[in-house]
Amino acid sequence: MELKLGVLALLEAKPDKAGELKEFLIGGKALVELEPGTRTWYAFQIDETHFGIFDTFAKEDARQAHLNGAIPKALGEVGPNLLAKDPELSTIDLLAVKHDKHD
Image: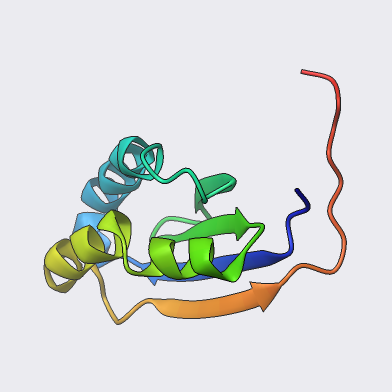
């Protein structure tokens, strides 16, 4: 099934909370493992205080399930303590995807 949809979330940590946000994101992998419709999930760090999450999906219902799932709920709980501002969230359409057949 082809990946057609994505979600990009950009996060800015409070300067003294960057380490905690990083650990939260690393721990988030266990939550997203329980979402069969989330085909890929990346948590990444851009610089000292800027982080992000990028996910891909084949179907809109899977994307909506993720947006209403455990990661956003958990982020809503810890966000006021860890984040300098609200996350920048974008739903996106994927135009081209490369799948590497070699592991």
